[in-house]
Length: 73
Image 1 (cartoon, rainbow, N blue to C red):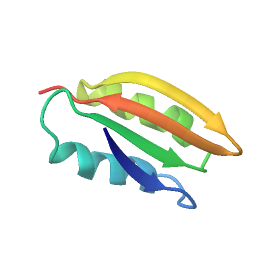
Image 2: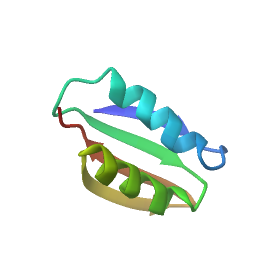
Image 3: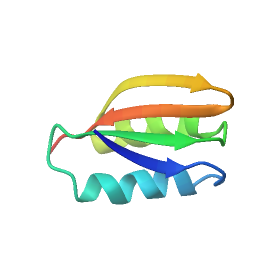
């Protein structure tokens, strides 16, 4: 699993960083983006859906959202 640290960044930076990581990842890779921007909770799943990736998990602890996506071809 790859972690993309986007803590402290505002929309759309967390999604942009996640997209860059996904572009280089082989299918089936799990990428977790860490984000403090509450908009990421909506933006990351929407991005995953539009790109054909799968959301596999989302948690929040102390204001940090961990959103995990599995890449597809």
